[in-house]
Length: 308
Length: 330
Image (cartoon, rainbow over all chains, first blue to last red; front, side, top):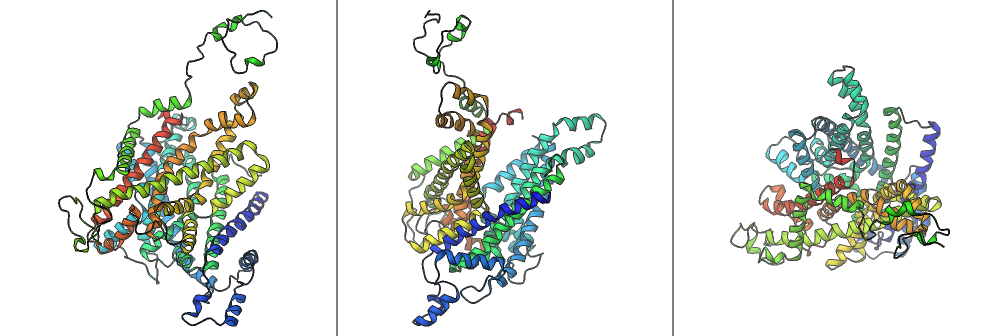
């Protein structure tokens, strides 16, 4: 078990190195001088410019700059962006919001996806199943920002049930509406996955045995159908945490959430290269660690799987 | 050498390699099989099953209508999508303009019809590119194994771990800085490349898995026995039999890419604003949505986009049912 975890953690190192390198290379390709912008309309004094470039290691070549960035990651000191704000502080301010938002979206899609998917799977091809099928197709087909705007208009502006925008002083209650919007596309996947999985397991031999020995239908579903059906659903949900955080770029834009998506988008637009790469690196880390966690959970949920 | 066969006009594949004459009398029944007869293959079977599905016909109608709109948008409107008159700003529907006008006075219906071209171009081209890269890399990785597999798999792990939307935002903003003025096709190609660059690993992984499953099946040994080379084995026998799951994923992802293009436009990173596209129209409509007035500017392109995406999702589902024997039980 520990050997397996260690092996997996070692395997993540090339992935993280490669991913940061790719993003770093892309940002590096962006033309324009980030330092020149700092001088505003005044002509740049060459000595000052050289000093600032040295401070940000811009006088080094591309590869050395990447190594400086890696050093920053491993020493937890990412330095400042080109406006002199500490990148670590920006990340510390932005990540809690997005993590909260993503987890709320996850809880929303997990609860609704599993409950509705189980009902649809148990009564396959019934009216409820058909309704859910149409509903999920509509959820998948409408772009998330259209759903976001409609919800904002309807629940926020017209009905006044939820905060229209979130803003700087975010609270969990203000995040409910953005979280629902963020989770809704994935809710469709979760629901359909649960439905298929439940429907498949219903015809399994062990379920028939459980019924034959006289177990009540509720217990059969809970102990024999659901426990098996939820394994693929758990995998999907776990791996998806990273996806939700990245997908938050759009949701955070609509609801003005001061999170990672907003930070990333602003930094990309302004050419704050180190900030962009830092954000993406953390996202990659989240994805990689969640995949590992899901694989370990597998062993708990499915006793047939053992990691030697 | 006694002639024992019932005079085959030409040797069948592999037969020319037999060295010794063999007693073929019991094989006469086999020899009687008409060589010209087309065998029931997987695709023919799948097509038969596909034809029986209402889902397939719904998606076929949607995609057919879409194709007609893309080819001849002028059939459905006389208005020019690029013509704008500020005096028409948010003007209500009138004769020849069934859904009224946008903020800048463009015809909503005409813009939606002409906008199909850009959105579908992005979706189709991205899907084709992703499928080609994914099928080739996945097939090579799965078939050859060893260090080729290791390199390709690690590479796909790296690209897979980077969030697609964020990565394409980075790529497009870089290119926007290099070359801000682009024509229609160049803009489309930039978005296609930005999406495809980080979307291929999904297909690669799926294809690799499918090839690994197929390559040890008996019919591959049979092909080798009648003299197929390794490469011919891969291209003629393994890949066609491993394609089914990839085709399903690719069809469904076509809709996903159309949505992604709209999302990029919403962020101001999609096609340039002078190109008529659903993404741009939806992006322009967002201010109206906030005020809750003139919502028709959003509904018309949004509905067109949703129906298009729906068409491809339904097609993917129908193909899945047709190709997957497990799904047939339902």
